Figure 1 (cartoon, rainbow, N blue to C red):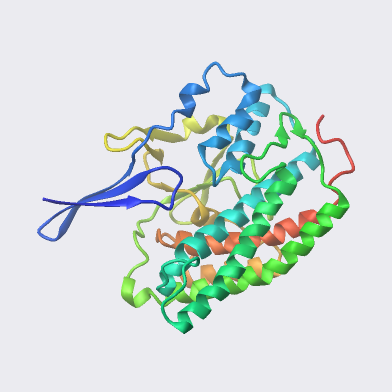
Figure 2: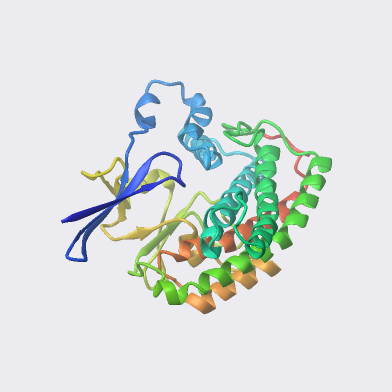
Length: 349
């Protein structure tokens, strides 16, 4: 038996993939998270109101989602409903994270791999590759910066935002600040589309070398999306069956009745399933489940994705191509919200 170990570095934390082979055949493959984070333990006994500033430390990349999830959990426990304006500002925080995260994943982490570059930050060996790298780097960082600035505007600070509190948010967004943010997003939207088109073409060009888009086993898809257009900030979890039918929905507080978590003997990360069946969550789930947004660019990319790969698309490597649809959607949705008054009513009940 031969054991192949591949350390993973483009994540928050430490992990590795371990593959065991015999006579050229793969016998097992496991993802191993190598550290115990322990948040569920050291939060015990902590004042509940401190959760929204503690749990974002789980991750420096997606701290916004942890901040909002913690506040939402407390509001559910206290039976508090935030006012509509506070919900819009929280949605802007979440959209900022999607912009920042998807731009980082697509254009900083994986696009260089598609183009044979070491990194967008390291000079390429030949003149043509260097010209491509320089062009991508500036635009990619500009799109990413728009996401971080949006999180800062709506959340108070980029890493570990602080503005969401039980019952609302601590402040609104002035018309002047909203207009400035809109100008920035309008400037990066065409850049994001151009970069995504480039990423799409480079990805499809890998087809002959890859031969497959990875594991395409039919799965159930789980996401807080659906039911209406323009909704990536929902408090309802929906489930899509392998044949593309929304087959279940539930409130997050009831997840134990629908999702099963199992510890593993090889990793600190466990397994979660839907009634014992394989699930996929993340960008591919949301693109499979989402409806047209009623915007020019998002609907174009969503239609292209489904015409090319079907609905639902199952291949696991399509996660990345789905990220691009979400990136464009987040920019267009944020632009729409920023057109509305965001400081003309109470931020909390």
